Amino acid sequence: LAQLFRPLDLLGMVYRTIRQGLIDMEAMYKLIDTQTEVADAPDAPALHVTAGEVRFDQVHFGYDPEREILHGISFTVPAGHTLAIVGPSGAGKSTIARILFRFYDIQSGRVTIDGQDIGAVTQQSLRAAIGIVPQDMVLFNDTVGYNIAYGREGASKAEIEAAARAAQIHDFIMGLPQGYDTRVGERGLKLSGGEKQRVAIARTLLKDPPVLVLDEATSALDSRTETEIQDVLRSIARKRTTLIVAHRLSTVVDADEIIVLDQGRIVERGRHADLVRADGLYAAMWARQAAEREEVEPEPKIEDVF
Ligand code: ATP
Image 1: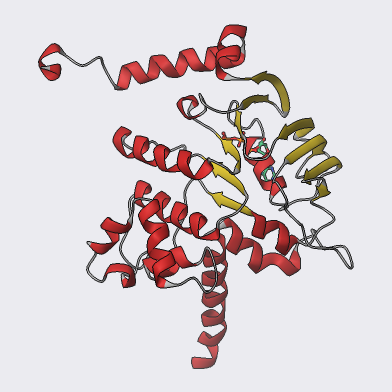
Image 2: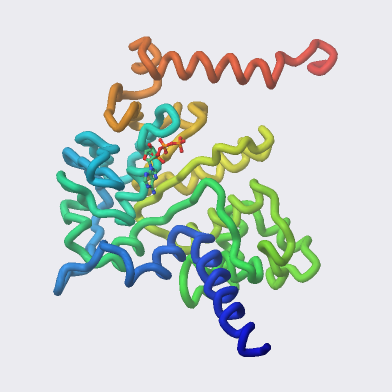
């Protein structure tokens, strides 16, 4: 009987390993590294980030070559600037982030960081340069400290705590039964969406990458948590080249440039005020979201104010 179960055990283990791997984009990549089509060129040099300029030049891409998703995307994010990518669901926003991280190779065009083609440098050096705060991070089944420390191998306790403090999660962690040693994740303490996002932010702060990708949560956090998280994100985006995949337009108002994507094409670009004035797709999305905001958050009543 034991022999019968052994393969099942193995299957279970493989399943768990895969699940664990899917937990985090970076971790997932490590797991399937050897099986993907994305490969380092022989003798590929390491990416050498000097300033952190990100450029997409006429990028064409489809997950399936028969079905192109991005039809010639071009933009430049100067070092330290913030680019927001907005657009309807399925427009290709997250695909741009995945391409920058080189989960996939593009069909044509060029993606560069400080002038170096990301397809020509080692994947390891590319991924070391980019920090991702994903929309919904699933935590490792390990301690909260481990989940933060994953940002940088060999980080000291003091560094982990400093990152947690900056992400405004330190006090919460200190209040947990075993502090940083408290187990979290599916088999441990369940954290809320906002808490998980703060852990992701702390991890990214520890990694301290020159390029940052923020994949904004689609699921609504309560408005106070959201404002607090946005403040933290704004401070970590400062001085770093940042790409925000934005679902709520309220977060992109300050971006240096906004690109509006529709069905894999940039249909509008500019700053918030310019786009509202242009009265196109962005203005329509903005008006719709403003109306929704008013619906959920009615004007305060006089008695609430006084
Ligand atoms: P949302 O706002 O809903 O997250 P998005 O703008 O980020 O949408 P993408 O996730 O980039 O959109 O998807 C763009 C298109 O690519 C969609 O048509 C989607 O179905 C397709 N797509 C996304 N991921 C894959 C994949 N792994 N394999 C095949 N097609 C995919």
